[in-house]
Length: 567
Image (cartoon, rainbow, N blue to C red; front, side, top):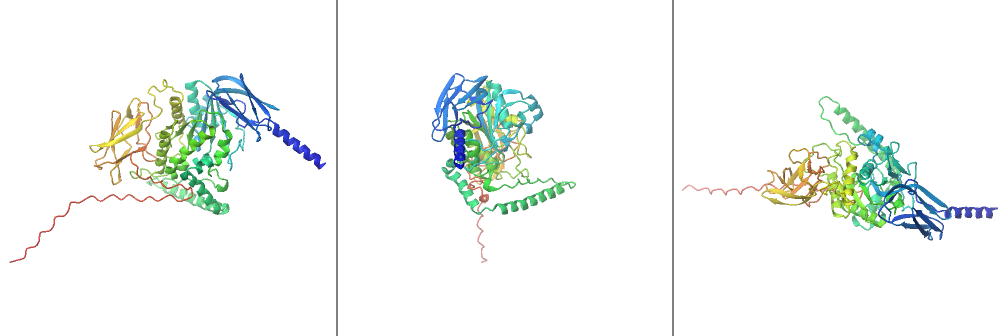
């Protein structure tokens, strides 16, 4: 009897394994990428022949020893006509209502995960959403210690959902408005894959081998390994509860002070996040890559849009190598030089009292700067600058419509060559292109000027600071002269460095091009930044030595006349 049950069990297991299966991303209503060979893959019994049919194409493959199979459909043309995709082995899977157009990954932390229903004018936007050819696939939040072949977690939203008033409220807002602009300008189906998670760090979205290969990134893995050796979840939870209680008490005390007549309002500290067990945390290196990126590789896409960085600001200089490592890793995983466009962190008060001292250290600004360096130095990359559409009090600014439009500008100009959409060919705001000192003024050249340089408000050019060799920053005056900008200060007779918009909250930064797109913050100096050396997530931030201005040189005192003796 036992032998019969064992045979039955083995036969059942073999039958189940013999079934042709597709990854979870292959379901009804999916969108396939046009203009590239398209990957279709899955599992079946070893040696089983699998036939994939789409339109007039029919491709065959045999499952390998591990049961994996894959075919590449020939290059497809855009099509808004629903077509069936069939996959047949011992069983047959038929996917209905498949379109062909442009497919983009939407990833990052909470500002990418932020939904349409939380964005500006959400009721109007939701009511007007009625485009069945704009579709979104949502990857549920999950972690894994090893790369997964398929999603380890699924929910009701694990489907390709059409844009309509019922669905769109839960879509990624930045992604949706990006896709909507592409739909408007390209008139082809658009598919968006939303794989994002609030509060997460870039290293969690990068594969372990990629991190290990770069010393500054491997320091993150080493830091976690050392931390977990002595980590006690029970004590950690107790400490967190005590800290939370203390912060809440402080918040209430400040509220009481602010309520006093004539009181100068003080900034409230942020309430702590809920406790997380670090052994299973989504912040660990590679765990989101394993569970939320690996399962969708190699789904054929045009590119990726990325909105993240808030959680890496204390290690901003490390981001100079971390973000390029992530981008190169994804391109290696896909075997394709996919386009990659980032949103630069928007202006935000970051819990500080404003105004801050001129030139004060600012990790947020340093992260913004490293983001732009990646966008400028890596091929097929770009940046949507958002320093003018932030919110001093809210890390999640609601104007995701403009964020999406600026991301779409990058793709429309660089990928789709839509010169009729942007006649001057600019995909973003002015970019600092070098400078020199002339007659006590720092004179700077710019690229991406488009129809010319101007100020957003029509007033004086502001947002610049300037320093001499003593590294003491002073508020600067600035003037647009054709395609150049002159910067100076009567307090700095011999300027050697200029910075622009160099603080997390800098509403006075008003340089734009004629197309209305803002300039990114920048710096001309190569002085050490405050986050240099911060590579371990658990090590205290490096302490930067304060700048001590050199004392002004005083004229030498005249030697005293010798006293003459009386005769």
